[in-house]
Image (cartoon, rainbow, N blue to C red):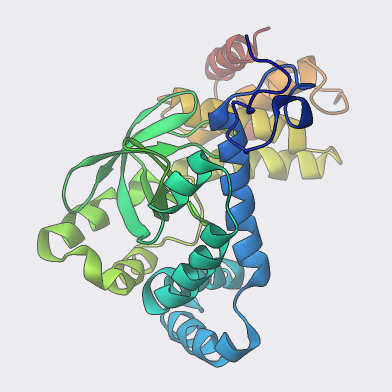
Length: 313
């Protein structure tokens, strides 16, 4: 049992009574994970400094010229700033890290931060999704990387992911900033690119992706049509689509239903949402919904049942 005057097990260097004694439970991993997040957050709040603006804008202009007319400007800026910090001007990151390490007392945090001086670019295919991590196969080496999930929304297997990463420990990694997913519509682009190229020319990969129709959407064309048809119908009816849209997105991503036509899933979602209070009730019938979406009542009912099962109803 830990005495109140013993060193706190979280590694802060303080006495237990002055640190974690009043917390219900504490582990070194939990405390260190929180501090690692603060280190990253503080970096993006402090940098780039004024003296680095010209160099940053030059990198941003290069990426904007390559992708700006095809992708949302915020996405292009997110890509550019990660390249600026972790490829073009790695000295800014390492200089910040040196300052943080000088002020770090907690041994467990210091041990992890000492491994952060060389961020790496991860481009790969998601092979398996677990509760807190996903297994990613690197596109160039085929090595497997355990990448921490950010958030609880479902992530489909076999999509590609792009991000800069840092190690948490020997097996696990976390994304530094932007984690960008590419639907399976673009799998062939990744496969062809990495047959011919290496990780070193990723701007060319981005150009090929936008030429193939990537617009920053993490959903396939099929999935996007499902969601667009739901929104269009509910807009016509003057209803809020947010709740049923989020449920349907999670359902489609996690369960990957094999519908022949996206409107069948959309119609099933409208019936389910109307019957279970996901939006203000519409005075309609199964027959009317089926006719609107030009699907059979049996197809509509099939996806209504699958959504009900997914929602636990």
